[in-house]
Figure (tube, rainbow over the protein chains, first blue to last red):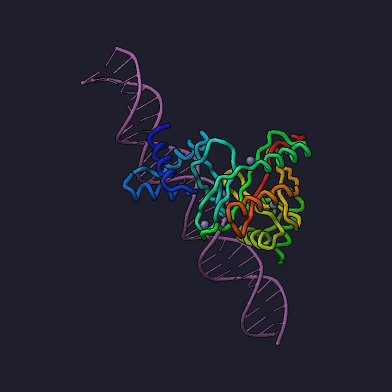
Length: 121
Length: 121
DNA sequence: TCACAAAATGGAAATGATTATCATTTCCAA
DNA sequence: TTGGAAATGATAATCATTTCCATTTTGTGA
Ligand SMILES: [Zn+2]
Ligand SMILES: [Zn+2]
Ligand SMILES: [Zn+2]
Ligand SMILES: [Zn+2]
């Protein structure tokens, strides 16, 4: 956990929601921080490894990042404003386990996200 | 539905599982078909629009495609061999709907995939 | 405080998937 | 047959991400 990691955590806290590496880099630059894009990518990768931020993908495949709680969870994301709610996925966990057993899969993981338009939008 | 679309459907039928645009292009080229990469991308995009193929993403964000049934469903994918099972997600559908209602979201969609190691691997 | 190795940093170039252009070819209905 | 629309594919352009590498910063023992 070095200086750059902390900078990224700070900006993610400030912005909330998901943002891409490029966007986070621009924000920091705009604020006068001379951090390099390479360092932004490195810090984000490190934070993902440490499970401090979530990585998921926009529809076009671009990686987006968000500060997250420390427990396994899923997201409800607004396609309008990007507002995000962390939700708990009891039903999913059970479903994934059941399906995996039924078909004889092991070392099982899963992804599940919900997206729509929030009440404000 | 033009000639190229049919070629792509044919090769996807033959290979089964997911493959990237680049991989599908290589396969066709290897078989002597002079189809261009551009056309492969166009055909795949068109098939996705028509809901004839599924588009999902590798961990690195690369798009992968697979011929699929015509009803809403999810996937159980082997990380070893790529073998894929279409599964039905009743629990997910209910979960997504419930969560969306609880937080006042509308026009709701969702993604859910399970991945692991199949019994053969 | 000083010297020095390890870690961190950032700019530039490389990579690789996807998309945009555009000239040419194929289709097809009149 | 013919004129225009649709399809095609080579090439170039985009754009996110990674690699490389030289420089700077940091930490530590003498
Ligand atoms: Zn919203
Ligand atoms: Zn889960
Ligand atoms: Zn397998
Ligand atoms: Zn579903």
